[in-house]
Amino acid sequence: MKAFSFSDLNRRSGEVLDAALAEPVSLNKRGRPRIVMLPLEHYERLKDLARHQDEPTAFTLETAPQEDIANLAAGFQDILDSEDDERR
Image 1 (tube, rainbow, N blue to C red):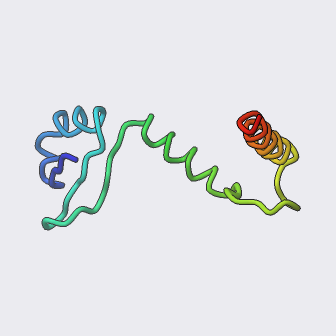
Image 2: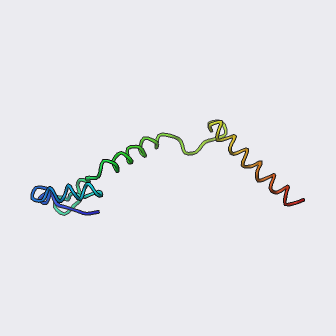
Image 3: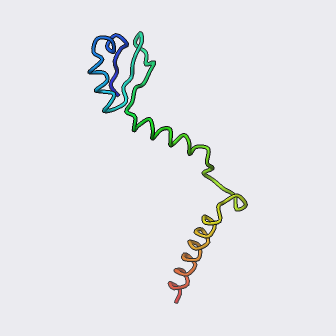
């Protein structure tokens, strides 16, 4: 990530903004990162990821969506069927 100072932003705003359109850019104050500027697409992607953080990533059999349970059962059945075929 490219880094610029707040002074750079005042003196070379075009360069800083061009860099921020291509990739995240850190703005530093007194040598320490304080702000990150990033392209809108990156921001939208981060917002979308954060929005999905509220969705559970693990389930119990009681809370799992029915479609997931059906897919799991079908997968187990495929494994059992392939083992039966190997025994024959």
